[in-house]
Length: 200
Image (cartoon, rainbow, N blue to C red; front, side, top):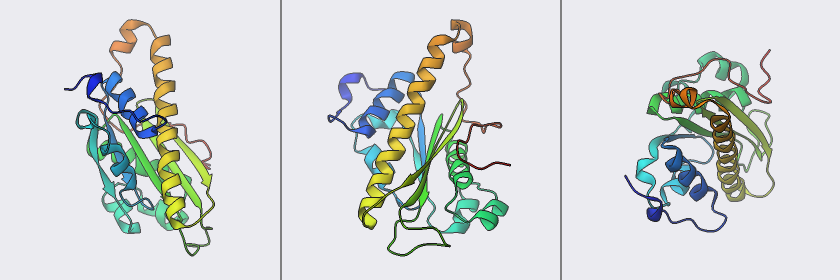
């Protein structure tokens, strides 16, 4: 596909950083969004040269679509509701699996103006699922609806950038024959690290 020269990398752009890193690793990305409603995928596709990296995304605003389209277990949604760290992890893993991508990136939370199911405005979970597992981050964001959604996009991309960097460091530490055999199928993982996910 493209070369590094095809990338526009605005200073400080987390989306450009992620796209460039994935291009370098020859890996792909899918998104699953709830409260951000497409803003995350829009930020990603603004970057020139992204077609070789971005597989696609799901906007699952309705709770039942989180299960029907993204594969979140129905029981989990009934028990916890849509704004939950395990749900965020399942969204990222489901998007990765359904879109056949190396990485899945997800957002779920309460943008406001009113609390949702007892969860406060500004409570957001972002999750990144990759070949080595899944990481979830809880955010407590201030400001109005627009700011919460925009900040969720930035924080999701930052989390993904950190996970890609960690994966690159792990690859460098592995023997070459193991690195060459790395699994990049986009298949679901078990035993994923879900920091803060409250697994029993």
